[in-house]
Amino acid sequence: MSKKMNMILFSGDYDKALAALILANSARELGIDVSMFFAFWGLFLLRNPNKITDEEKTNYEKLFARMTPKGPEDLPLSKMNFSGLGKTFLKEMMKDDDAPPLEAFLKGARKKGVKFYGCKLSMEVMGFKKEELIPEVEIIDAKGYIKDAVDSDIQLFI
Amino acid sequence: MSKKMNMILFSGDYDKALAALILANSARELGIDVSMFFAFWGLFLLRNPNKITDEEKTNYEKLFARMTPKGPEDLPLSKMNFSGLGKTFLKEMMKDDDAPPLEAFLKGARKKGVKFYGCKLSMEVMGFKKEELIPEVEIIDAKGYIKDAVDSDIQLFI
Amino acid sequence: MSKKMNMILFSGDYDKALAALILANSARELGIDVSMFFAFWGLFLLRNPNKITDEEKTNYEKLFARMTPKGPEDLPLSKMNFSGLGKTFLKEMMKDDDAPPLEAFLKGARKKGVKFYGCKLSMEVMGFKKEELIPEVEIIDAKGYIKDAVDSDIQLFI
Image 1 (tube, one colour):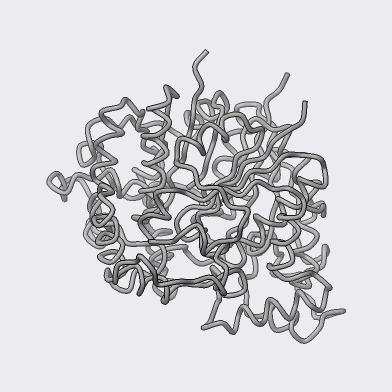
Image 2 (cartoon, helix red, strand yellow; image 1 turned 135 degrees about the vertical axis):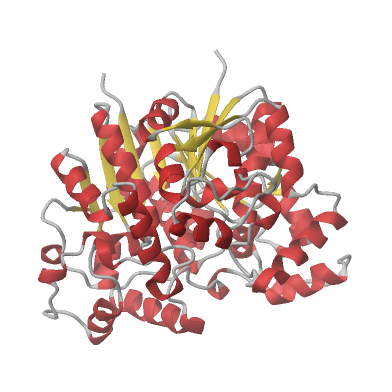
């Protein structure tokens, strides 16, 4: 029977998203099923910068939508961000080693059949609409996450 | 046989505590046993603001007790806290969606029979007394945590 | 059959490294096998301050090597670091309770046979050489980590 890996991505940091997506890609290459549940700040990774809308949003939600990162390359580092300088630094070091950027790992995960789940409550609170995210995302609640996690062989909170 | 979920709450952030308690409540509603082990900053969530005492504390411990968050609603956000502005913002957005505040999820978890464990070493180092925390907390050491976690179907470090 | 615990240490924070190593020591004392996979900032913990070299490094890598923590006692706190004041504070409180410092828990883990793995991609990107780390470290890639984690009874992302 095939193995399964489940990750919550709670963090909205570039480096943690990178770690999560590298693990997702690696697990798929080993034939392991992968589910990712994006909650809170983690949802920023799934935003499509070209699909952001003000429709049907409260003033708080509109302001929040503008103040927060819009998609993968907009995420800050968890440490040593130095107003973006640290991230530029990391990306330069990655380029020197031919390591692909975050966006490429996200594309890889989408192609390789990683399951993308968005947290229903987080979506509602932040005012994000399904149409503003990458199309693969299915919206489920915390119980949906738990049911998926309890049947997995690896669970991580990132 | 019933399933079991184990979480370490290491973080003292409002948003991470919220995530942990939403998961705890959801798992209990699915009939899954839940253990939460509170270590380091995570212990702040369990403090009862009305039971804080200076008795039998060193000067470091007294100062530390005053400088750190006293119970659930006192916790800061992990990101975009902006001296509390970001948290007010989040709480307003939650209210708009009828999402209960952190304190309500903590009460829910207590009523639903989530097991609350406090880390012995963290308690000793920070100088917290059992009487300063919510009454459900049982103090155990890291080995106690490991024994509980190794028999669980889900383990998360939050 | 013996049980197994697997941790990724992604964080480069003193307090999180402390938590991870306390768990590693406790698990070994219970006869549980322990693997630790050090990625990104987590690698700082394994640096030997006396073995840091500039050889075969790009300018970015040299600068990065100098700007970042050099071994266990050089790591900052994840919260309330206050330019190191918070850490001094924590260490004083630990001393008062006869709790050993981070370095002692690292030594304990090495003596007790914890398996130390360094993330290949992180090493390459950051320009760290195997010789700059503690000698027990074996370098593996993300797939190696996944294979180890999927056969473990506990997996944590720290």
